[in-house]
Image (cartoon, rainbow, N blue to C red; front, side, top):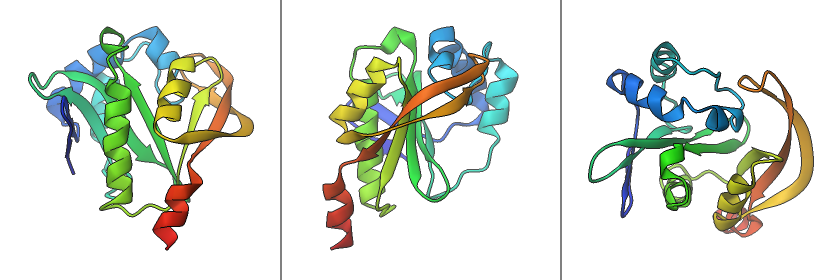
Length: 174
């Protein structure tokens, strides 16, 4: 599965992407904003991630610039009962709207071909950039918080839960 936006190509990662993935995500601040990413992040970590099987209902994409195919981030859906949106953008590409653009493409896939009734998300309480992206994508805080392990931080961190707007779930049920 692929998605194309005005500036981005969302595509599955391949083993040949391991060095580019490790370089893009290998920033302490990025790793600390994600639950399952260790720091430091090695090429071997990238190879292990890229070798994971793909679930057609829970796609994972590398976010690449369309003009150069340069890896600028990652985005995907995860979770068992409900799909959970997760994403990250390499520091050199912050502030360009890539997370929102990629998020809109994934939400369109969730609505269209995947027909997922509800998408959830979590963010670390101190990740205000992610709060802004989620707001732009139509997510609202549920008011719930929980403790989530963070490999990079080496501790449990407080996360804020969000749920995608109810109108989408209601519209899909109709």
